[in-house]
Length: 215
Image 1: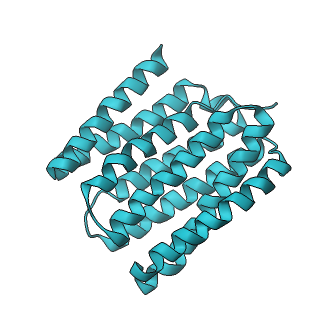
Image 2 (image 1 turned 90 degrees about the vertical axis):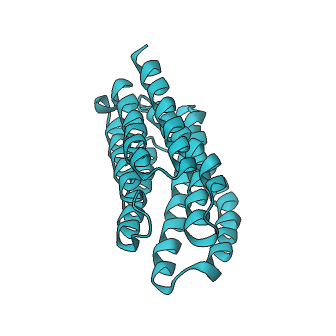
């Protein structure tokens, strides 16, 4: 019951965030975004994140994402954008570590790796013409890491029988495209209109899996 209340509060905060982004209200974003991100951290805690090694590492990943969300709030701040990018990069790494703790099915990981490679190459080809020179290596590293996260998630989902792990990781991967498009290709509210709900949905899904521990 508590978790449902936290999910509902997160949804309300996300709606407030979308409204603020649409209106161009930076004070509104500064209020709504940290609240929405605190929501998925709270859901993980309520679901028992501190009770298993997997849950603890997922919690670390969610907190890193919370930090990334805050660092990405300022407009036009390249240094803070890089810090936010690193926070999310470490968040993805932490998720991959958590999924590996579940004893992932290597066959599913191999299949997922084959499926993840073409989209990764397409994304890099799509972004490359618009990337500043100093951003090329960080973006390549980011695409590699988020692909690895999806691959390990597929293996963990197969090992634990929790398809939500793969679903959450895939939604997280896809939501990153809205940040990339908005930052490097074309800024518009349309990017946020689908990317923000997808991102918060992904985090809530992953937060709900903290009890997926084979031990």
